[in-house]
Length: 343
Image (cartoon, rainbow, N blue to C red; front, side):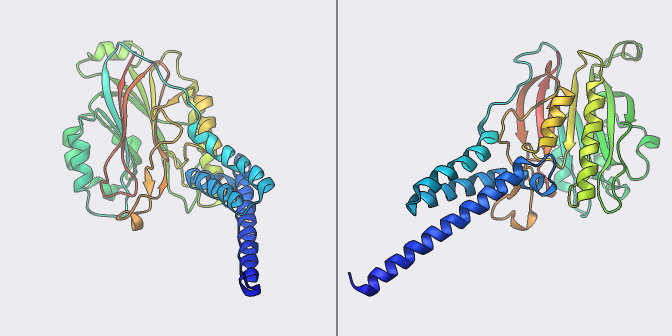
C-alpha cells in the first residue's frame, strides 16, 4: 500500500467514524426529546414519525458497528430499543367475543378544500356502514352530500350542528340523543377542529318507547381536535382529548361506547395513551404499529408517508371482528372502518 492509499484509507475511516458519531448523536437527541413528549412540544411532534425514528436508530447502530466503534455501538442499541418497543409491544384488546348485534362503524376526514367528492360518497354508501363519523365538514361540503342524506336515515339535529358542523355523523341506527361534549376548549384562531359529538343510538327496529326507557344500546363519540401545528394548538388538542376522555369515563358502567375520528394524535403520543387510560377504551386497530391514515398527498403516487391519527376506540365489552384502513377517496386521510359486535 502506498502512502497515498494509506492516507486515503485513514481519511475514509475517519470520515466513517465521524459520520456514525454524528448520526448516533442526532438519534440520541431525538429519542430523548420523544421520551419527554408529555411536556415537550417538539418531542410530541417526533412521535408522529416514530417508525421513521426507529429505522434511523437502527441505521445509526449499524453504522457504529461498521465503523468499528464497539462502545458507541453498545450505546446506539439503546435508542433502537426505546424507539422500537412502542411499535412491537402487545396492547390491550377488546372482548374476545360478544353475543349482541353486529354493526360497522367508520370515520373519515373529508378534506374540506376540494369540490370532487364522488369517490368519498361512493365509498360511504357502498361499504355497508351503519355509523359514519366525518371531520372537516363545512356548509359548503354538505351541499355535495345529498346522496348521504338519502342513504343514512338519522343525523344529529340541524340546530345542534349549525351551518358549519365540522364534526358530522350519519347513521343507519336511530340517533335518540345528540349533544356536544362540554368543557372542551375552543379551537385556536388559526386552527381547524370541531366540537365533539356525543350520540346515543338505538338499533333499527327498536320501538320509540323501548328506546326512550332503556339505556342506550350504543354511545358514539365523534371528535376532531385541532392539529398541533403550533404550541397553542398543541395545548388545545391535549385539553380537548382530556375533556372527551373524562366524558367517556363518566358513562354508566357497562355502556357500550365507541369513540372515533381524526384525533390529530398518533398512536405513540403520550396524549393518545393518556386518552385510552382515562376513558377505559381500547384501540380497535389491535396493534401498536397501525397503518398510516394521514398522508402527504404530494407523494401519494409513490408512497404514503404519514402517521396513524384516525382512530376507532371501543369499550372493553365490545368485540372487534375486523379493523381496516380504507382506500384513497380523495382526502389526505384514509377512512377507517371496524366491524363490531355489541355485548
